[in-house]
Picture (cartoon, rainbow, N blue to C red):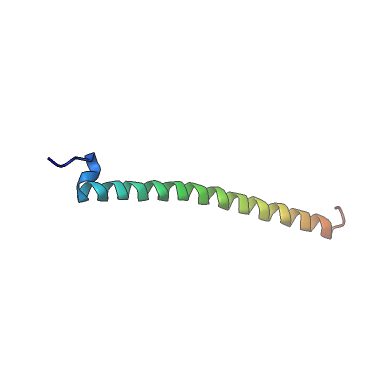
Length: 59
């Protein structure tokens, strides 16, 4: 009697686990990229404001 490994025992189960893992990576990646774009946008605004202030001689 072969040892059963649960859902990973069949190719279909392995495919299901792989697809779920890919979905988790995509969702987490989407969240990280959303956060990264916010940080980039904030950085651009801060640098632009500092540039304008230095051009006007305030800073």
